[in-house]
Amino acid sequence: MEALEKNNTEKNISLQEIIEKMRTIAESDCDDSNKNEATSLKKLFYYTLNNCRFNQTADEDKSEDYNALEEEFKGLFNIFHEKRNAFIAAKQKKEADNLEKRKNIIKKIEAYIENPEKIHEAFNDFKALQQEWKEIGEVPANEKSEVFKKYNSLNEQFYDLLKMNIELREYDFKKNLEIKTELCEKAEALDKEENVISAFNSLQALHEQWTQTGPVAKDVREQIWLRFKEASTVINKKHNAFFEERKQKEQEALKEKEEICQKAEAIDLSNINTAADWNKITDDVKKIQQEWKNAGYTPAKISESIYDRYRNACSKFFEARNAFFGKINEERKANKKLKMELIKKANELKNSNDWRNTANAIANLQKEWKTIGPVPTQSNQSMWKEFNAACNEFFQRRQAAYDKNKNEEIENLKKKQAVIEQIENFKDLGDAKDNAKAVKKLIAEFNAIGRVPYDEKDNVYESYHKAVDKVFDALKLDDLFRPADVNKLRSIAEKLKNEILTAENNFMFLSPANSKKQNPLLDEMKKNIEKMKKDLEKTLKRIEINEKKA
Image (cartoon, rainbow, N blue to C red; front, side):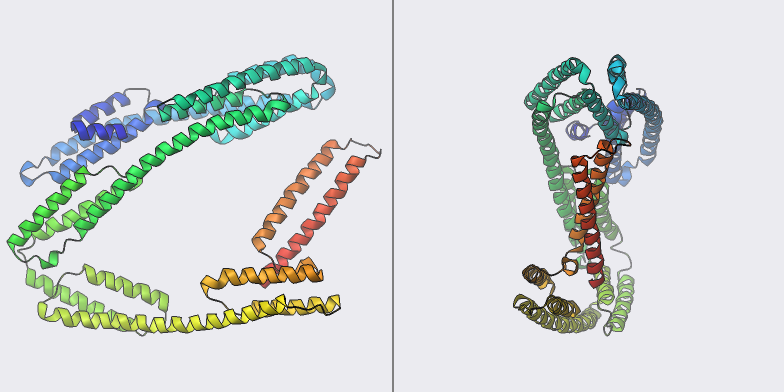
């Protein structure tokens, strides 16, 4: 799209030329190679079409020709869209079939692993499955990572069990290492590629080959992966930097166009009273339109809305100019009626104590006031004073209420700081139960105090938790009642759950079926699992206690 837009700017490409480009694409296979170009052509067509329509004069009215061109383009784009949908459907079915083939291979390998005593007999079949795996095409993107991860994991398990064929395993490892070393070299060579997009796409292909390649020896597995990862990081950074630069240019263009919109929107129509004034402002608007044409292109997601804003601002001016010699007096009387209604609403709202909703309502009245045109000169000043006075009365009352709440929060801060000081200076009472009871009382007192100033909240709670942790550690109180961040406790609990699940799976995997022999390793694993379960139970209890406090 960027190339097309540049071409349009430099060569003034016509609507008919864009249609012919779209026709060429519609007559193609409509696969992934021309998806972006078709979308870009659509954007360029409507951009060019809107410019032609917007900038045409009454004497040059050709709307019927533009409508015909638009219908012709729509027809070609719909053909592309239908062929594109058919291509995607066929591709998705093929990927789904490939996924089932890969899952069947995984099931066969799992069957070999379930019979480790006969695994050496299955080696040739296993190699055939590996070759079959490599020949299978793409699978759905959302399934790819998991199915390849499972396949590679089973490959490693197979080779780990294949002790009697260690020479063959080492040979495969060696060949895989050679392949992955070559992939590393190719990835490193991409740093010299000038075309960042081409280099990035080539890197994705190398990653695909890496995924298809089997494992290497354990002693070099991490080393070869880190090498490939580092080479990939170089290309990914360049790729990200390329799009960041383009994004920055689009943001600069957006900022420039927003400023142009602000210029157009800032034109004060209420002070234009003569034909000479209108002609002068018209020249200014034409300069604004030229600035818009010279500005760059904005991000796609906002280009239409910013253009609408610009067009609306210009349209507002030209509509006002065309209507200037109309019913000026009647309009000002109508404006007076509208503003009198706003004054009435402002007076009705000024004594409200619903601070938030009323503030929004009055702000909307103020915005609406600004959108209403001028009123008769003799009424303008007095009406504004009455409206502004009603608005100010409400905001002054709200500020007084906020000041009162702020004073209460400051008092609460002093109270909480006093409790923290008591906790920091807490003396051992000599009896564990008395200590626990006294500390819990101080914690309850702290929690009962109301809100503090927002900018002091984090500091006071940090001091509070430090003081509580210090007294709990010094007196060796039961951690079950220690105040804590519930989110941190939840993270600890989730981590313990995962560790318990992993440990239990490892225990079941290593524990021989129907074996009654003593096994120190398994006994130690069992004790560790029990300990983690107790820690989890205690953590969950602490979460429950701290949630009740909250």
